[in-house]
Image (cartoon, rainbow, N blue to C red; front, side, top):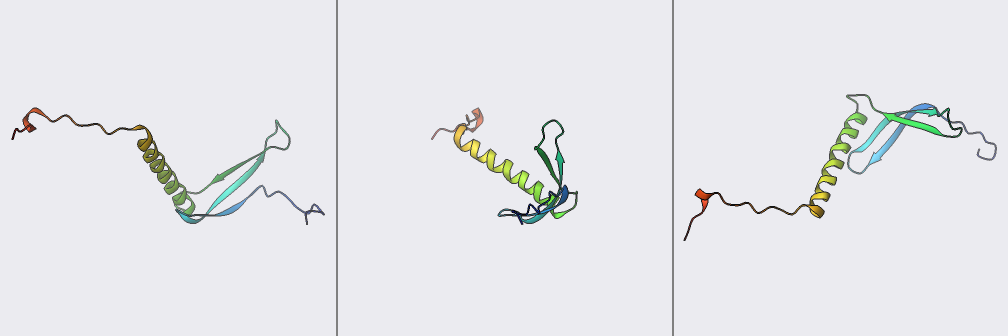
Length: 92
């Protein structure tokens, strides 16, 4: 097949994915040739609202933001020591 160059570029279609966090889902894609530079192709992936692919992308975005937030807290944030309010100080 490759030697005969019997290969063609699909401009639109559906790609199936498996992700360890969200499982299996599908995204539609559209490939667009960039007119300014021959040989470059922009591929846009999307999912319609209400589809499993849409839900998977939203879950991944939330999960990624949580993972990044937790990672940045571990390396940069030092927990603040709260100053007790005056009426909470008790002597023993």
